[in-house]
Image (tube, rainbow, N blue to C red):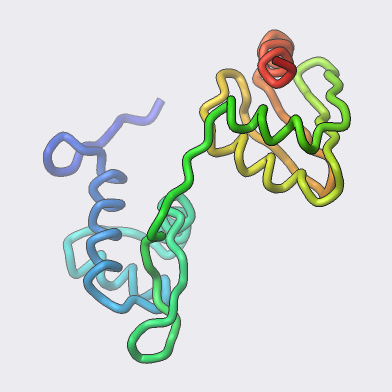
Length: 158
């Protein structure tokens, strides 16, 4: 197991870097990942372009048009929070079928709805659910084991 390194104030290095990234993109027009790597280095953080790419995804940064007319990174204005109850309500409108095979669940929904349901499931902490893969009308829910798959299946059917 890797040791957890801490930055300032008891935060992990990653948490400190994420905080600094939000600060940087709020105060400067950062157009590229390379510019963000440079800005982090100037602030005393060591990060590669690959690390910054993951950070951008985790922080859900978006690109918006800056004052120069060019695209820059920004923090989303609103963040949507989802709940398992909200997912169940959405499923009542689009549900087709749900089947389990060991630790896997196959959820069929009306065409065009799998991606949004998958994004909602990924955004909610569902115990035992490791992740989802979504097509147009089908989702593959990957659970940590068969017992977790039964539990997730029961949660979705409620």
